[in-house]
Image 1 (cartoon, rainbow, N blue to C red):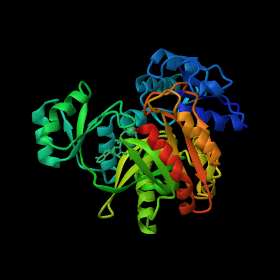
Image 2 (image 1 turned 180 degrees about the horizontal axis):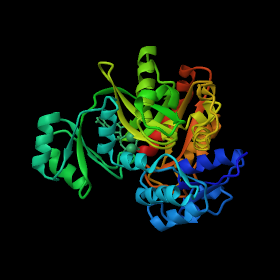
Image 3 (image 1 turned 90 degrees about the horizontal axis):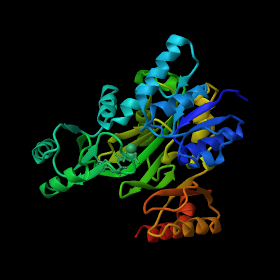
Image 4 (image 1 turned 90 degrees about the vertical axis):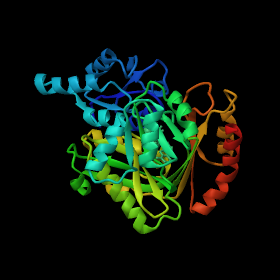
Length: 396
Ligand code: ATP
Ligand code: MG
Ligand code: MG
């Protein structure tokens, strides 16, 4: 189908599901990560053993590929910038998607917010914290009110980088929990629902005004988080009016259109009590909220990412929801193998099970997920009930 080799920085579960999509099209994928990482386990290409934060390892990967992409945003973007410039000067054909500029900007949640504001995408009010002192948190509380969310600007995932500040008594613990990390404070979003939309960007240019021609989108889904980690995804979002759905779709596509490069992007949003929708954050890659697309849409988010970076056509119909679906994450429990009880129960319930090949679990680690697809959401909610109970027992 395509003789080009795609290199991926990172070999976790998102990389693994990307390799599955590429394998189905007989496209070779080289992974940069540790030996036997989840993605490498199912890839015929030997890839490169090393870290996606190591410049030399990224160069080695680039020497074996035609296109570079990421499954995680916390990569060394400086070497990606150099590689892109070398392409321009030496005529070496390495295409980096999405652009290193996009990855770099998204890595810093505060800069990402500024970009969204420039693109006229609504976000929660925020304030930079230049010194990690109680005084600066007091100033932030003065501007944003309490509670607010203290956030690490960089290196954040699964809520590891967030600290809810509910009262002045939390100042010391918040600062010590996020010690040594660049910080900003974000106004508390009193949301009634968290929404997400996977957007496929098919044109390189960054311009929120051309969102209709540069992006396509999957349906609006509802995400439920526990301890800041995604737990459940309902596709479509339950009880969302057509008007709010349209607003979420437009916001997500405008947000993504404002970033350079191609591929899929995950857009997380807050739906507030007064029906305002705010963008929370953007992921420049496949996303947990889009796993359901594997079973519930003609093209999965991984297929779509592959096709977008290869400049192949994507039919808008392929992104539509064929049937309602619910996705439940399989997180590690206190015992290294206890998560398997949920995977086994999911098999018995007729769910589609994905285990990531991470070996023994630690508590809260994403070990897999399961998806139920069916005729109606109430029916799926019924079927999901006892699986959620098992997940809750693992969590406690
Ligand atoms: P991810 O794994 O999605 O990358 P992350 O570590 O980058 O997570 P966020 O997406 O910023 O973290 O926050 C995780 C969750 O914490 C959100 O989905 C939401 O439930 C809650 N949260 C984040 N920011 C706020 C806020 N300003 N107000 C209220 N809740 C928030
Ligand atoms: Mg994040
Ligand atoms: Mg998030």
